[in-house]
Picture 1 (cartoon, rainbow, N blue to C red):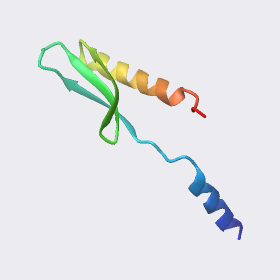
Picture 2: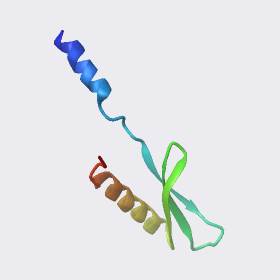
Picture 3: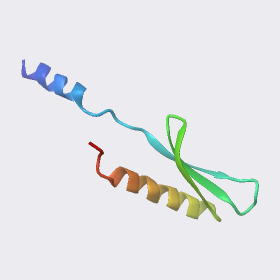
Picture 4: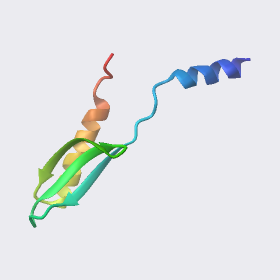
Length: 72
């Protein structure tokens, strides 16, 4: 029976979130948008002047979101 108990506890744990950083070029040639989305819903976004900077900024914000303490 210990297996059933363990599986029951696993089912009560917090669900896994799938967050992604998406970088896309804007109409202006030197403007890139980054945004963090969950299931197609944009949670936060920002802009940068290069694709590399946009990716780094998006990754940094994602890391900050994942590092933040969980709300009660």
